[in-house]
Structures are given as C-alpha cells and as structure tokens.
Length: 322
Image (cartoon, rainbow, N blue to C red; front, side, top):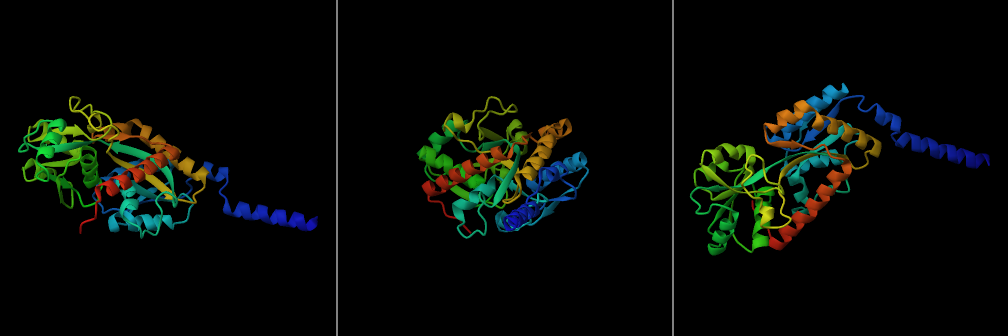
C-alpha cells in the first residue's frame, strides 16, 4: 500500500512539473513575449505585428517583442518556433503563404498542423484582381472570355513562383479551364500593371485604390468572398467561381505542446487587441479588418487552406521555378 502511495505521489509530482496549471495562465504573461516574424523587415507582416505587439504590451504590462528570423520563404523562422519551449513566450507570425508549404515541400523539419498550436487569426486584408488599361476587358467575365480566346497571351504578374499570387491565378485557371503566362517578381508588381508591362496582378486593395480611382488601372474583381465597401460595384470572383476566396491574412501560432490554458489566454489578449477602438480605427485606414479569432477558428482556416493549395498545385501540375 505504501509503495502504491509512493508511486501515485511520484506521478502527481511529475504531472505538476510538466503541466502549466490554470493559475499560471491567469497571470500570463509574467515576462516578455517574443513574436517571431519569419520574413524580412519592412513587409506588411512585420509592420502590422508591431501594431498588435505595442497594444498587447499596453494591455498586459509586459513587453511583446517583434523579432525577425527570415529565410527559406519563412521556413527558418517556423522551424525555430516549432522547437522553442512550449510555454507561450515564443509565437510565430504567419500569413496565408504559410499554408502553402505542404503543397511543395516534403523535406520540412516541421508539420504546420501537428507541430503548432493555433492562437489567433488576427486580421484580413482585401485583395483585388488588378488589370492594365491596355488589356481590352472591363470586368472579370470579359477577362475570362478574353483569356479563353487568347490562351497563354495574358501576362499574369505574381510576387514569386509558388506564392499566394501565383496559386490564386492557378485556381482561376483550373476552375475556368484557361491558361495565362505567369511572370514572377520579387514583390507585387502593381507598378508594372499601371505601366502596361503586365496585364493583370492580384494586389492589396489599399495599394491599388489610388490607381483605380485615378483611372490608371482597372479592378476586375474582389478576390475575397465579400464585396468591398470601397468598391461596392466590383463583383467578387466567387460570384463567377463558387467557393473562391483569397485574401491576405495574418495569424499567430505557438509551439505545438503549448498548454491549452496558455494558448487560450494568449488568444484572449489578441482578441482584446483586435476589438480595441484605436486599433480598429488605425487598421481601417490601411484596409485591414481586425478579427481576433479563437484558436479553433484559426486551426480551421489553416486546415482548409492547406487542403485547398494542395489541390490547386496538384490539379495545375505546378512546379516551383527558380
């Protein structure tokens, strides 16, 4: 009996030593939290994350620090966080591009679903299919008809082979049985469309709006599932291709073994940030919709997109170009 009691006491001590208890979550964070941006400084992910980090610091009284570990299109930073101590004090900043990894890379040191704990889908940005005035189409239906009648002649600009821009175009190709020629750049080539050197490009609405209103480029369609208040007369691609939904988004995830109590507490902090009136007003000027989701909602988004991009890559037989 004494031996059994000793064994039970030992198991209890082990559980207490490896499990973060609810009271720890109640006082979280008790020291600085580092948010790893796996991309180069200057991009929207880092700039936007700094807004949330500053507000989270003010709300909690602890610093939320933004750090950069760029390389391998985000894989280096992701691998770092996957191996980090699962205590909630190291988070990974992810965008929609993160969910493309499984479609192309079989040699990753991490599984983006199994090795991470989703925390919060924090925001979404509206994207638009932007066309050069030199392209003789006025809307998405005319665009599809033109591409179908001129296979391979339309130049579709992207921000890189295998990226969201590229795959968003491949999804259109697959759904409409059309063919364009992809031209890959290191950044989104809005200026190339305005200059007439590229026919179309998926682009952020805010970055494109001044050109659209000035008549220097044409908005063929909104790429998300809802029409934009800024361009209420421009239809969505989903109105022609049911289920089509491509927007830029930002989320925060933690190492996979992070205790649920800590994950939920962190998610609650960012939900507060997303609801803060000053943050809502600040982001609205940039065309950003704050969300502040639950961990389950971000997980569902990630799973949905992983499956979606695998299907697009397979159906389009897409290979990464150097």
